[in-house]
Image (cartoon, rainbow, N blue to C red; front, side, top):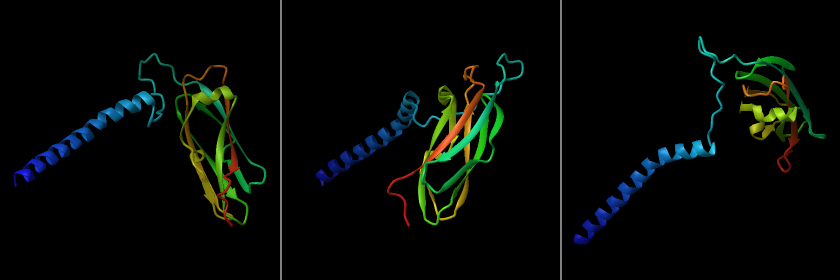
Length: 175
C-alpha cells in the first residue's frame, strides 16, 4: 500500500512537470519564431496617420506574365496584364489555369521577378506557387496572388514584372 502511494506521488509530480513544461513552451515558441522568422506574417505597411511625416507609398507599375514548360498541356494567364499600385499596399491579381489535355496533370509554378533585384521587395501572402496543383482533364481554375511591394523598394525600380513558369511534376502524372 505504501509503495502505491509513493508511485502515485511520483506520477502526479511527473504530470505536473509535464504540464508546466507545456505551459512554458508557449512563450518560448513565440521567442523562437521571432528570432528565426518562422510563422512571420507579412502585413501591409501601416497607412500614415493624420499629420504624420510618413509619405504615402510611391506608385509602381506592375506587369504580370506566365508561361508553361514545353510539353505541359496547361494554359496559364494572368487576368490582368498590368496595373498601377503603391508600395506598402496589398495587391491582388488572379491567374487562370486550364488543363488542355485529356489526362490528369500535376504542375508547380515557380515565380520570377524582373528585374531580379525586385524579388526581395515583393512579399507574397497567397500564391498558387506555394504548392503543387493537380488538374483533372479539361479543368479550369482561378488562383489569387496576394502580395505587398515593400516601401523600401529602391526608386530606380518603378516597374516590376511578376512572372510564373509552370513545370510538370515528374511522377505525379496519372492517366
